Length: 91
Image (cartoon, rainbow, N blue to C red):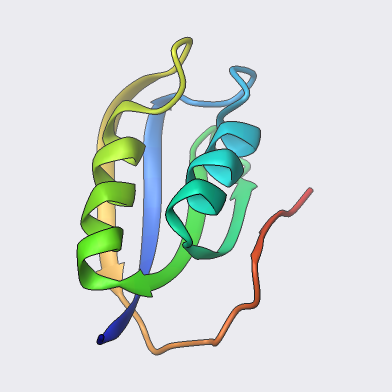
């Protein structure tokens, strides 16, 4: 399986709604490695690595987010693999 690395910016009502914790739960359930952090502009940044099929499912989850989130925009960028081990929430 081919591993891919995506950098994802999630915009909308995505801070203060448990987006980072929920992202970790979704990533762990799907076997996605990487990290998630809040950005100063109110958006959320995610680095995610996994196989292409799993990544599609993860990106679909990111478009929705947790129940209290209101995602207005998703920006995706391919990037080189960083070989993360596990998924972490960065403060």
